[in-house]
Image 1 (tube, rainbow, N blue to C red):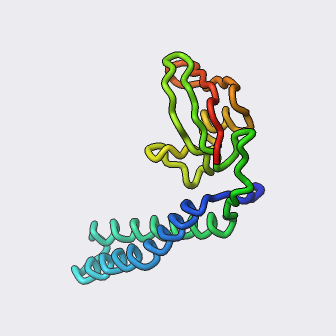
Image 2: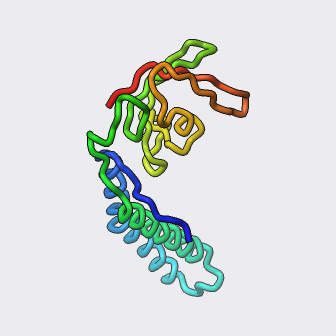
Length: 159
């Protein structure tokens, strides 16, 4: 059996997961129950595509609720003291310089459950996240990408 490990979350990440769970339980469950009720009202459910679709959506929502509840059960709030500035750790805000172009990018390293690339939050399990985790300023890391190896220099690590 797989070992269950703590999932470190930022305050913002924890609040978002709790809000998502509450929305699924209070809003989405009600919406899908209403869809099922309406589909049953149409009569014979054995050949009712709307009923089947609603039941599939209901199963998906219930699975998502269970998944979020399990994540929250194993979640631990990341404290300010957990975030290091001597090396890249979960919660670190890291400035990276792509060696070839010189372009800089700022990312925050988070757990996989709260990663969101468009917000600059990358997972510690992603190729870049795994490469920079535990490294210090001025280290150069190589990341394998479909287009080839990309090298990044760690310019700054902050909270």
